[in-house]
Image (tube, rainbow, N blue to C red; front, side, top):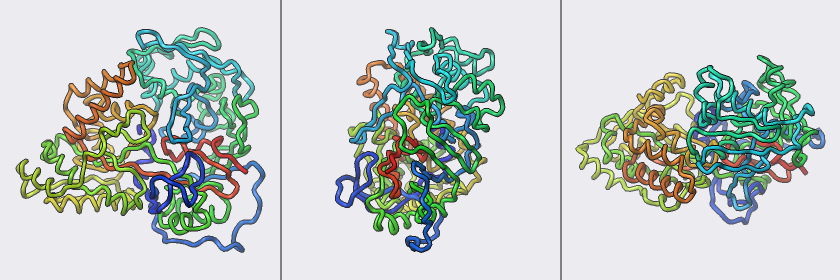
Length: 567
């Protein structure tokens, strides 16, 4: 994903090898449930398996009633959604959006109105007319109006914003991004509860974007009054969401329930979120200092031994990440510019073995760009890619590389243990067909510099959904020549780029999804632009004070606190 990749690429294959049975959305997994087995996991430090903390050493002091205690692994740099690409704790819990993604019991998702009461779309597919709820107050008691929506979307386009991708479809966005004007011509406030947004062109994926934290609705008055202090002083982080942030430091945040919240009051009346190194999270949870443990942030052996097989085995909540994990191939670097060579690499990698060895089978093999759980995913484009090293050797010979060639894979020096293991297994598979792999470690900054300029030959990548629309995946990588170079894919078919752009304007959903499926087939089956690998599961362990928990729909680490129900 565009935002979370900054933080999550570093965690790109944190693994937990564990055999578990599937569960319904947000409910602990029991010992006899049906469904997929295995679990996604983590290698956040190989510290060895630890047993449960002895009872006499556990913290027996009872937490306050209604208090939820969680841990995060990184300091939060800001509370300002327009100045971050990954610090989402405050935006997700303090602010609201026009729409939200609702998870159903069967695991499916749907877009539902939040601040929007009703909306309509013009016949040309460009102008949205939104009518807002008239009962929404900010946490300071002031009323949320259409002017706050206009201000929030305009601020997203400011030159210093990190969120321009989610508003640049609006007519006149370029003038705001260049600093010429403050509000794009495509935004028109009609009255306190009605606003019109006109796009440059029809874009079927626009409404899903409005459900992302990037499109959180800010209080114009508090932002302007806060000035430079907005984003660091909780007094100015005024939202209409279920919580108020009362204390904020980079390593600690405190939230309390918003008494003016228009929705159902959250079960957790107070939340403490503190930064804890992943190697310490297990001990803190065992000592009953945490109510939820993120399974992707701890050693996978601990999850298997102390949770999946221990007294918490029925208190594991699983979410299938809506993500793509792949091996990027630079289509301009010789001999990767030969489609037979790329197809040989696809067939030479034993993805099932990697998924089982590194993640305990905790995931789903992918044969395209759209993961299971994303709108646009189709079984028709799955199952075609099979492990076949002998056929891979034949393809290399047909391409003129019977004796193989040298392939440089760019790794991050901060790569997780799981990622390192994956790269090692991939290199072994490729060497079996004669490809001599050298894994070169780069510091993150120079690696990103090279990647953004299309200068990396091959690397391991991960993308997690920002919003539930195929455009979020396809346009990111193949919406233009520049997008393709930015990811070091260097795909060069201009007609394909145009198809991706044109697909955004297809209003008829069935026709739009059929076009996305056809593009997916062309890119991965016919042209083998990269090697699709798999998506992984995300497991959480819930403590004895938690009745139920629904993880974020896409599998992010961020938690929506109102989705936790305490006993």
